[in-house]
Length: 231
Image (cartoon, rainbow, N blue to C red; front, side, top):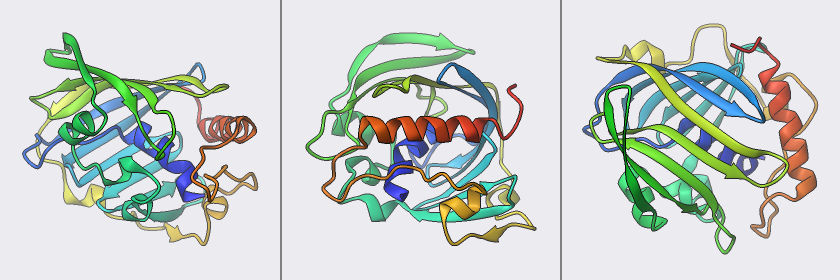
């Protein structure tokens, strides 16, 4: 199941830059399946950042990722290193490596919210020996972070966009990257989410989810979004 949610996590978290990244906070808007969700990102460095989106708090403390569900007050822990054999993206730790590993091409520049961005486009492989997913990034060298990304997922999910706004640079408190009081570790993703529907997983042969699995994932994401009102 953890492999099944990894693609979604990477789309939400985007990709950090280098160790010298500027600390910042910003509003994060995710548009998936025609529904917009507004969350927050708190970025300290490439290995330590926090996202709040779709009823979840995601704390990345590389190589561990903590997913906290606000409704159930429970969380699960994943280790990115567990996916390295099946997922080429799991070992990518900065944006430059992403570009080189997937032979992404520059498509020009654009200034967004006062930050000059270089636009990169290409197919990013999440599974070995499988076609890549078309992705486009607007990368700010000053922030060392993609201000915007657009991804094309297999049907029926379609296009997913993610961008940040109201960017405020400055030191981020260490307390943001700790498990909040009142949360308990869950034995499974289903327990943490407080629902009985299971997220589809990658098959043991390394093949991506089937159309039926993707439809189930779509329904699951809709349920996650419905845990709080649209912004």
